[in-house]
Image (cartoon, rainbow, N blue to C red; front, side, top):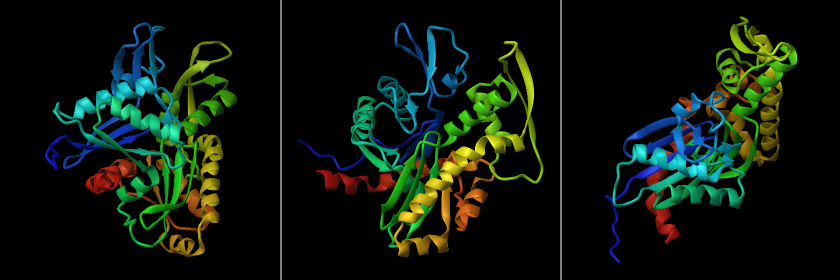
Length: 337
């Protein structure tokens, strides 16, 4: 059998996020950034829309069409739909070639073997020649520009849509890690619950996300911001308009934010003293879209007493790190042969 060393099939890195899928192609950089939403016809099982187009349908579909997010809490909750979504994205970015691409996908740090296998199988069915997995905190650290190969402790807190992954990294691996299912989605849920409890009004997930992005905060703001939202009054059943303030958002979001802080605290407690000293010197790096909630870095800094930095282009850190890790695929292939 002939063995070709290079030039066939592309190497692709995928940040398979609960909220967003980001695709990186070796030599080209980030080529696709789409919401992880798929619209499916219930009667035929046919995929009608994927990504941004499907996201616009969330909460607005007739009975026979379901707009779903096939990933929940960082893992695959609907295997068939995930496979179709991956196939759609891979076809979009990778021109038809005789040789299928090698794909590296990042996963939360505490996933089970069954969950790992589901990701590998979905990618293989979607057209990958070979699939590699990388833990999210490692990919985030590489993407944030941290040299993880040195014997120094670096702490990364990656807050995505479904999970918050926390890891202390040294010599290219995780020394201590934790993964909790509290992240962007739980922040949105907390806002929906708060508005329902305080105003007896139901708002949608997308409205909650807009509130979080625009006026959400977990640390007192100098100036109180406000935003108008529309929802359904549970008393009358009619549409209504509310004005929500950022001080109310703080009340809504402080509980899930403190769960993230407690998880970071838990990892620091288990960190070997030498590495803890390194973290104390260098600080904690935050990555992922969830870390952009206003004041989360300040809250974490206040509760741990350690300097906290938000990585540049924090939303893309995991995808960029997965992309950079593609450079080592040939070495990994050597190991696995």
